Length: 269
Image 1 (cartoon, rainbow, N blue to C red):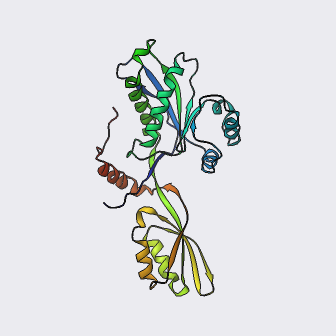
Image 2 (cartoon, helix red, strand yellow; image 1 turned 90 degrees about the vertical axis):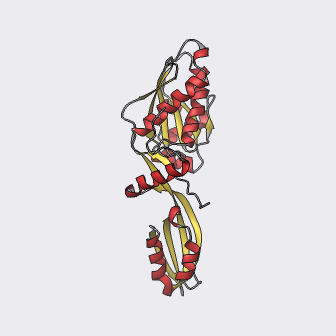
């Protein structure tokens, strides 16, 4: 089968209001808000300063790192789960049975972060806050069959009103070739929807640094060989995710949903 590019889903603004997730039996209601993580938190996560995982007890070391990354100290103590570069915060107060249901909330938070609302791609850089809960007194009415749909609906609903969009994988590449092929390499990068970052000459060789979307890179090595008479080489410098251009968002979303067999306009359950 043709190679598959894995994209990322994220949000670009806070959800304007809290969104309700209701259990199928209507006895439990959960309320969520989402917002993008701050640049400082994203950097700390990328550098590995913030450990991922569920936070089940007091963790002063983690609180210190979160505070240093600019998080409000009251909020940092309420972080419950850090998963794939996303964060779950328990912003509720005085909920009697929350200890019995928080694990189920974390289960479904992780599930939604693995498969976002736009096209079922993994999410990144999203902070989800539980703002309130209304729970049934009887534990029999708040099992997984009731809770999972409510949490899923609330988080996905919040993300859908927070301007969600797709990030695409980008690779920073280093190209080397004899100087007479300088123009050919520049043209190759431009044709691949790439961006030329730097170009230097070292004797008879030109070294070019460029950023290219992974989706456009299939066949790059053979195109580079033919453009440089077999004398050009390339190597990977770095890779990350960047916002997919606006004009391509809908096209790529349709392609992903079509490949996964998802309906073009998904309705929340």
